[in-house]
Image 1 (cartoon, rainbow, N blue to C red):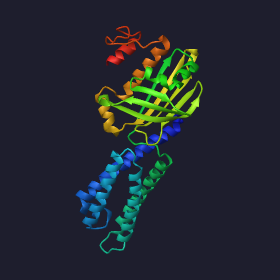
Image 2: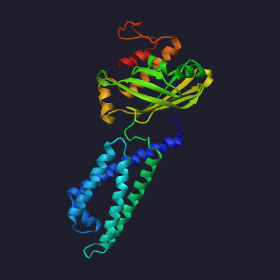
Image 3: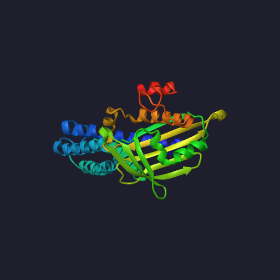
Image 4: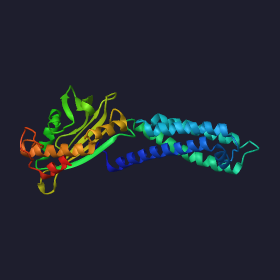
Amino acid sequence: MGNRNGKGMKHLDEKKLVRGLGWFSLGLGLAGILAPRRLGKAIGVGDRSLLLQLVGLRELVSGIGILTRDDPAPWIKGRVAGDMLDLALLGAALFSETSDAGKITMATAAVAGVTALDVRCSRALQERPGMRLHAIRVRKTVTINRSPEELYRFWRQFDNLPQFMAHLESVQSLEGNRSHWVAKGPAGTSVEWDAELINDKPGELIAWRSLENSQVDHAGSVRFERATGNRGTVVKVDLQYAPPAGVIGASIAKLFGESPDKQIEVDLLRFKQLIETGEIARTEGQPAGRSRSTSRKFDDFIRA
């Protein structure tokens, strides 16, 4: 959404960290539940099977929550609280006659290191409450033989978008910088949400995002950059959304031939045709025009 590369990379790294902590919780949880005696011996606390199984169950639940829920923030906070409890238990175990002080010290250092990662991750999620672990992101580019100003004006009228975006039924401008979107869902359903304009640079950039509590957690931006040699405009689209049913919803959409990555690429080819020729040539015998379009790339891609 107009972020610099450094910020985008940081965002990507944080998502990897969240997933890594989720898998770590699963692994530790299974070890605590299935092999509590071995785990107790490894960390120097002796045979405390029941306690370690309870800790393992907590870690297993945290891992599942982190990896399956779209918003991992509450589960990461839960890990931080669990880390504090683990450090307290290890501290208490040092005074036990049956414990191995050396191993406990090493285990405490390891838990402290993981705690630092959990705290860092929790703070990052607090600073970026809109970040979703399973959000789908699509980035596509097309070059169009028109000026950035002309393309910006067309796109800025949001009710023009359904002319070339096949997944949209309508976009209605509301008061202020808000708009109402209606999109096609799987099996003939519809999905609606309200969005607001968050960045608007005439001839350069349009960025928007859905309002809080919308059916779809959606954000997008489109940049218009003059091509080298004055050969038209490079249009860069960046879309991110979380389907209503998360990853499962995205999988269902693909079964209906609506893979977001391919869909947006087709939409941009339609946008190019509409702007450069004044119409979108139909294929497969549809009644709106020629049996083949003027773009072989479009025909080959749409049939793939």
